[in-house]
Image (cartoon, rainbow, N blue to C red):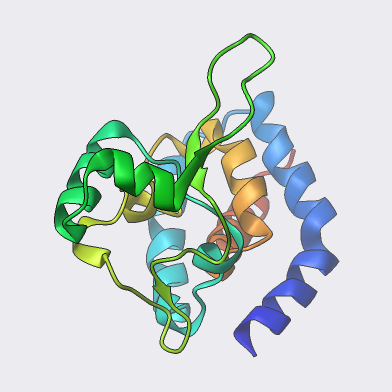
Length: 173
């Protein structure tokens, strides 16, 4: 139910959210950090990740070397065996930079589909632990991240919606 409602809301508001986030390329809101902190608390009160799990069903984390070492050890595997069984390298970037290491398939192999719990939660990739990346950078520096996550993540949707409401109530652009 949560995912269907989220899809409907996202589809309805995608353009206005994109337009709002794009404004941060040129505009500065001095209180944005405070607005974001309040919005984040409110969003987490409204959405419980265990009611969703959509990030694990539709997205993939990027695995870093430390993640691979930690998870392979936890699973009693060699790093080479872990890589061979669970992850692949994405296509290289246009500049020749190697692609990221990601899950071979979706949903994530470590997601229990019945209860949306991660079977390696204690040692999960840093990308998962940091998701939806609200604290990774300042709000205005994450336009692309938010736009990508909005499609799949109800808590990101609620967070951006609340920041948008606060900014629009306080400022005329």
